[in-house]
Length: 154
Image 1: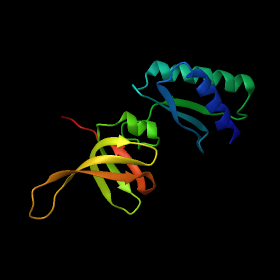
Image 2 (image 1 turned 180 degrees about the vertical axis):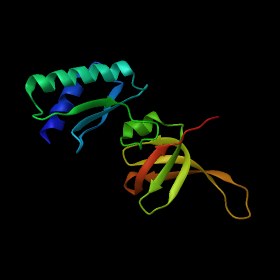
Image 3 (image 1 turned 90 degrees about the vertical axis):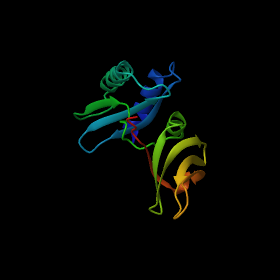
Image 4 (image 1 turned 120 degrees about the vertical axis):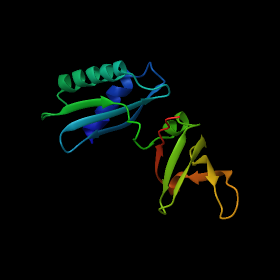
């Protein structure tokens, strides 16, 4: 869609001097809400979101890119949002994750690494009648349906 392409250009223009920030997604939803999700290697501040919102909003209005009423939302993914990009996996290395696989299985463990083809987690394996042990498990991205960071209150 042309709107999302132009919005991507505007966001990239605004964050060009901030290599720690990156775009997770840009979507025009059915309720005419233009949603921009930003993330950062060190998090995203409210000021970052405000700055991007003002920049994008100004140019969308100035260029009359959207010919109907819309609402612009710029935010970071919530803690319960699934990881979508390799960069998000890398950012969350060392954290506990829950991975849903395409075959319906679920895995939980510490995210040890991620590259273009797979992630590696350290999961606790408990076999009947034996003591639990830690095992590294490689999970190819083509077998991953969804990955979420687990919230720890320790």
